[in-house]
Image (cartoon, rainbow, N blue to C red; front, side, top):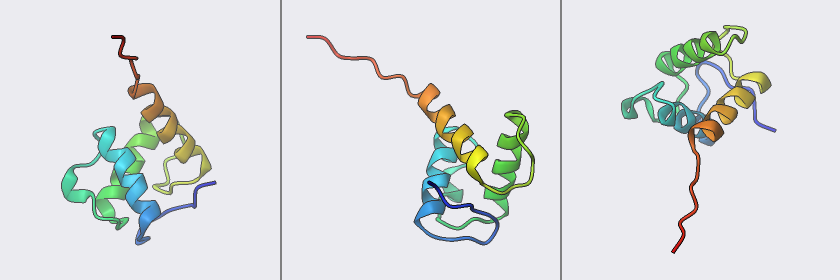
Length: 82
């Protein structure tokens, strides 16, 4: 599964998290830097609050699931018929 992420984490998992947040409009491209800083933490807190999750700013299993579910809901693919 996905790793638990929190303030000061860095790397590709954080980059993926930020990509999900960016696609959901919760962060700006300026915050897309693979570093879990205060702006990413605030975006997570906002997301957790909106989704009725425990608001702790930590990205655990429930937050990952909600983020991925939201992206899946927001991305509806329409087949192209020729």
